[in-house]
Image 1: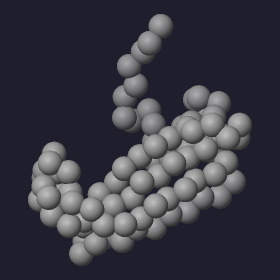
Image 2: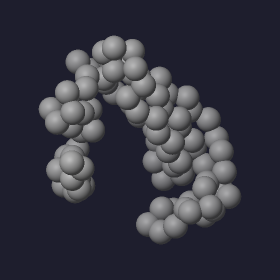
Image 3: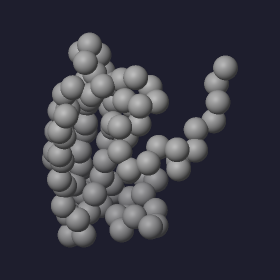
Length: 89
């Protein structure tokens, strides 16, 4: 059956979690970076106000069988942080 997953079980690396707990190996990642309005649900501690111009990332991760393993959307304030992506095997 289904069980509840707690945030502290995941750790700092989602892909390591996928590998160790779900037996899914991420083999390829595509990031599309642009600008977009912050979502309506933006709220503290996020520095972005809903609708404010923000950095925006859409990520698609593929597993070793070329299946989609992850899709994510991330908004960020480029005045506060910068986007960086690293993947090694």
